[in-house]
Length: 400
Image (cartoon, rainbow, N blue to C red; front, side, top):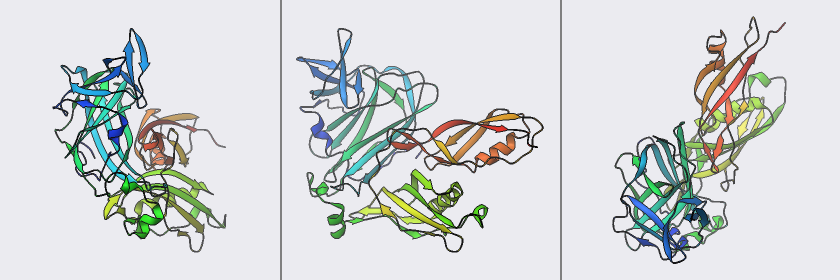
């Protein structure tokens, strides 16, 4: 959601408070901040993060400081340079397939920088309506001026959280970086989860039996077609798609595809995206749900099977890779190569394209038309699908 923030989130980050002990904080929590950590009876600035562990600098040497006391206080000045926040979003979801039906909170931001920033981390702050604030420090990728950077953090959440205000601060080498974005605070609504961790102490089956969890379902399916290019050539086959359905009932990301024949993939993609869904819910509140769906193809009556709710898979980072990539069928007078730059989104589709090499070639236009039909396995960054810009060459050879 460009230049906006999610104003209403389900109960989030109630478990964060226990991650750092004896946290101290300044009254003006959501103003400019600095983060200090205890090290040998001193409070030293956190100059970087190693995952979720603070790093300090002692006599020119960097030291990891696990399980330390953290203090957040006002800072005197921002670091040089600035970051423009182009997009920020947040969502609450539930892993229906986990043993305890765990909730998670995901924060995503797309930023652009005036200069390069190294040793970056983010400070999340939750100030509940009652009680002390909670903090979370997490390492994020370095931010540079070559393009946009994506910040993605997933945190455990407790539905017993009573609501409050949410803020985040971006740091580079221990100093907060000035952010340019709308003055649009994110308000976190509470959810009655029974208090404490009681809301997490249920299996998927027991929660469903209690009528509290309703999985996502298809309410208006798109009919599956058998590809014309395979008619009379193959008797049938199977395909599978793993994807997430958002709180508004729309598909928000593809995680993976598999098919007996690549020609099945366009039909699977269109069927998933064009079908209408009802979002999964917990106590009537919509949630992001991850599902697996199987598809059976034959020439007479291809069909889509029911959704299977699954745990969110543990995915390694990867680049976007083409799964269905038909090449343009054109004749050329001489061998040539056209190189294109494609923006591939979280649904595996090509959102935009431009020719970066061979733009004067007579087949450049045909190349762009061809790639617009391609289907990719989306890139994964930080364990989640992400938009990615990729460069692909298309070679044309003389055929007899």
